[in-house]
Length: 253
Image (cartoon, rainbow, N blue to C red; front, top):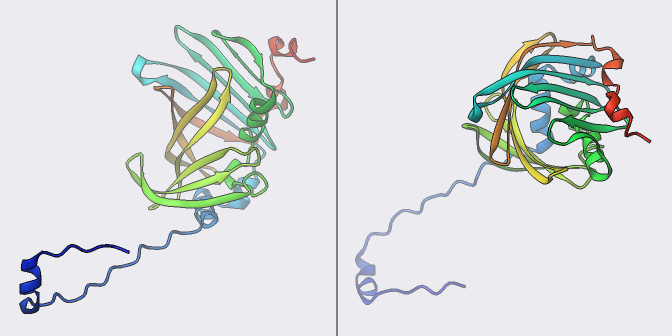
């Protein structure tokens, strides 16, 4: 219950004041269901059948750290059901190598040397390596919810919560105008602890049957890195690409 305070003047003159016509307040527009938003994205990139028709991909481009004014080559390999390799070279820093071969997850870089992933970090690597992650499989994401319509990366987007089977909540943003995924916000376990990551997907281009984001920006720990792909091809990846490097094989017991 609210207590309304009315002045004496208002009481005296109220009977003589014209009553303003009642105004109707419009109910806020109902947000679309999360699964419908995801299905719209799937349709926008080419459709479920086109996504599932591919078994591997290979992307080539550059990785850059804009604040430092440096860039170098990057290669990304992926294969069904859950294999991924990312190789990059940063001038002045060296070679970076990260992968998941279906059983083992690892990283090799000049700062930490070769490292095997274990426990929660390994489980997250497996889920992140899902070749068909774009489909947001209910077996991996059992809980979905549309949170709001908001602005992300200068675009009007639907903000969607995705609860994963490992208990982690991911956030997706989908462009209201195009239906395409604009980016996301995630938290991941790393050797440096838990890190919040904001990713931006842009410059979608048609590659064969699919429309692919050719630019991916990641913001974390106050730094930004950007991957710009110049070419993408599907179903031409040799399985041997996913074998762990010798330094990692030496760590596998």
